Length: 424
Image (cartoon, rainbow, N blue to C red; front, side, top):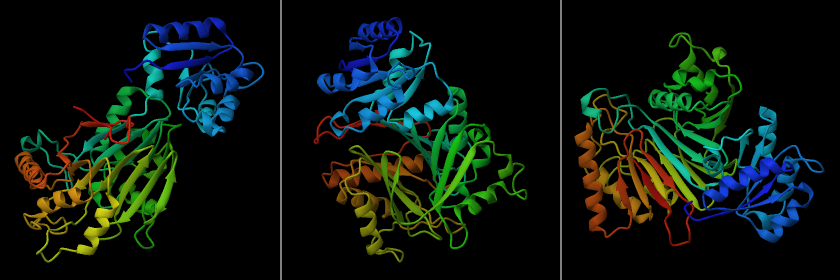
């Protein structure tokens, strides 16, 4: 957010309000102060600020109720709400978020970080981070130094403190370490499991936030017949395989079985698609305020002329990823069902590029690399996909993200802007 923004500070303490105003103005932004919560809605309607910073404890009207009133008026949807309060209890934070606030900043504010803290909540960026990019099993050693050796785990952080975690392979340990380093307290997130094969769930016992009281997680994924996602996840904590059991978890953990359908999770729409993989395996598509993302692991996508080619399934994949900003898709050469990981055909990467082009995918991300694919093999896959896209004159770009890579999907400034930023 490089351009100046207009803020309205709704705060009954004039000294506190003036301090926030000065900090924002020093960074080039415009800031107004409203000391009367009861008049704030009318003022927002007249002034149409980009964002409002709202205290909770104010005479006449509680700040949470003020947020609720503002959010009840569709014409004020453009105003982003951030609560700045000395009430730091989890219940108050939850009330503020449920009333439409994007985030909560605790008082006393830190002058050194306040403006950055505000923008962490106000910005519209969707942040995509890769914690593990491999499939089947981890790949330790120098052959995987550049791309990393951990199995599947990807996060999507949405404005308003929403975090989606896709799969829980060994890469989730790196996510766990990052969360601990941040020092974030009382986090909430949703884990969307593609399927319960071990390379997609066996990192969960090492996910430290599950053992922190006050954290809250919803773990979702496909049932396998009469085996629920709770039971499937529970096997990772079975005493036969793990020293840690489900009874040891201190966080609040909920489980939810998903099918092929469309769901509303918080402020985003999530669509699922059954994949041609042994057992029930789901792909996920997230649509959020003009941005879109697909996570398609274990696709079993094959090239025409091979015995496993399925044009009907390919058509469903093409429809599912159509027009998406970022598509993270299985690109393994090998057939994960076989111990030898026999290649499914060297044309599979070319076909993947052709399908992404046909679906008008903006950014194709090669993912879920097999254990026989070292860094050089991934480089070769990437070069192959790019050459096919170049030959097609495609607008689709293609990369192979390494562990730790972040992608920022910004809100498009206009319908013709793709909104993509890349951060190493």
